[in-house]
Length: 172
Image (cartoon, rainbow, N blue to C red; front, side, top):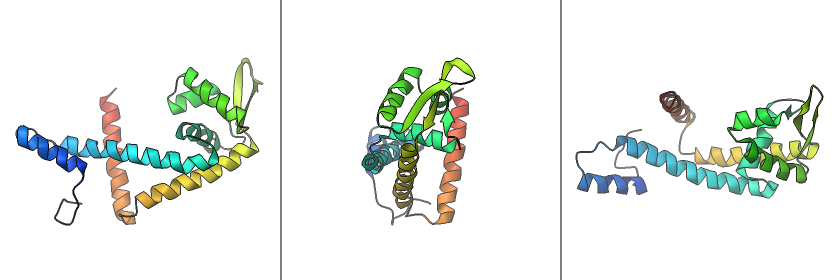
């Protein structure tokens, strides 16, 4: 996908033009890429919040429920496993679990193999909510990809995978 006359200009183009006017020596290609990734992430994050709102959950709560759902039956993990998967502190996880438990979407129970540990399990209501919310979220995401055909969407996913891998490795 090369830039051509048929593509519309976006706010990142205006920022790049401003930098070119005051600092023509700068190579702003990275700013073009990451500026758009940032704006895309923010926009899609807002859309996902809207998609999950009818189910009474936020994006963060969706993440907890979907992690339990993806774990397979019996949809049970320890708070530590959830925290590690979601890269959350135990304090942040506790707040989410409290809210989801109060809503009847999950339950905490003693770990039968560790008397100091807990297990977190999806309830039937939680299973229903996450199954409907994931479908709603995928509908929003699929619509956002509608400008691309399957091959282009696959290429974009592959390029982003490489970029993410490279940036995560560089950060270590």
